[in-house]
Length: 207
Image (tube, rainbow, N blue to C red):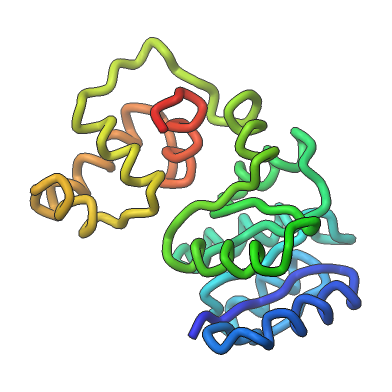
């Protein structure tokens, strides 16, 4: 069962999402929040698997909520669900550590599939946002940095949503070797987490 926390300042949107998700046996809504601060506080209490986070909310926006959740609860996935796909909003989400970014205009089935993918460790970005990340969002491309073949394999598999154990199995390596290799890769690229590694791979046409 995937536990979902809804964060949106418009109550009718939360109600609509809750009704849509109620039809999925594998998904359970455990709470609703109207801003980023409430989302963070509810996440601490309810320990959801995925937070569906709007970005533009009063008082404390989705960027605040995402950053606090990822800081305190790094295993909780944050999937941005918003109306906006402008550079500023996308950058705010990515810089805050969001695990995915989709738009409210998407079909219900697409939203549900995105939730399941993010819960399974796969970063999900809708088409417009994917292109925006490639062109605009941080971290900036570092073409002068040379990657080894193994480091490139790590990046590709991270983008596929593989965890360290799965990467180790696919590359016939020890899990500790993968963990240490990814740590060195983060240090080499001056990045802080796997989401930024995925963004880097996208911007540099590695995937």
